[in-house]
Amino acid sequence: MNKNISVVLIAHNEESNIGKMVHGLKNSYDKEILEIVVVDDNSTDRTSAVVRELQKDYDNLKLVNRKPPCGVGRALKTGFRSVDDRAEYILTMDSDFIDNIDQVRALIKEAEKGFDGVIGSRYIKGGRLINYPFLKKFMNRCFHLTLRALCNVNVADTSNNFKLYKRKLFQGLPYLSDDFAMNAETGILPVLFGYSIKEVPVSWTGRTGNMGKSKFSLLKNASSYMRVITNVIGKKYKVN
Ligand SMILES: Nc1nc2c(ncn2[C@@H]2O[C@H](COP(=O)(O)OP(=O)(O)OP(=O)(O)O)[C@@H](O)[C@H]2O)c(=O)[nH]1
Ligand SMILES: [Mg+2]
Image (cartoon, rainbow, N blue to C red; front, side):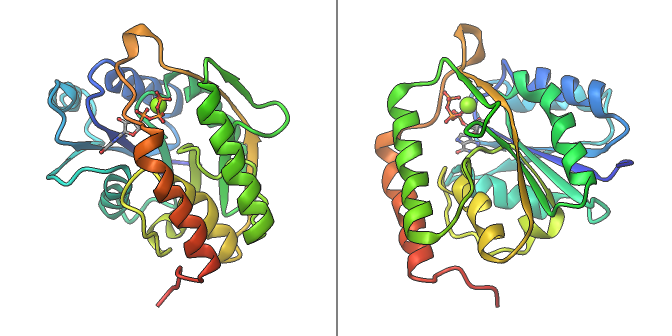
């Protein structure tokens, strides 16, 4: 893969992580990465300032500043619209996935075998969760059990924002969610539309003290994830 991956990093108040992500990706995958697109949603910290500083060293680093309303889904969609048309693949990662940078190699290797998309999966053999809240894991497993039982989607980890897909899978499918639940849609819709998706095991470590705060709230987002399931059952995802 020579210079054909656009990386989309979504960020809201990630000043302590975003520089490490950009450096880490550039250092390890300069041959493969065409560009890195950071989508900053109204951060009140120095996230954008850090990126602007890095742009002095990296000419293929883009910064997109969104206006409110914020949201993971909105930011991802903005990111997908902003990538260079020459990119064959888009890699999505959270801005706190510093420990996962080494694992991008495994995703690239699988994509090179010809799969339309590869997911870094926490829930297949070899995947690991370190310092992960019990309730979040429990709810995630319930979500996937329901998906399997009612929607016939047999992907162990649809909702991890660690995905390397052919560009059209991110740009061409009808994602409806504006919030965190879009991470589940990017795992589910390619399966619904018949693309070949491969999961590779990754380990995931929770944020530690110097990594900023989580923005995820189970209470605020649970209904959005349930809506994804009712959308699948109600056949709401349609390509025009
Ligand atoms: N652009 C944008 N990014 C967001 C928004 N909300 C969260 N993010 C980013 O989405 C990613 C995931 O958010 P996290 O807070 O890490 O959520 P999480 O991974 O479920 O929570 P932790 O397990 O504590 O890390 C991070 O890169 C955030 O900066 C938003 O409204 N807009
Ligand atoms: Mg996180």
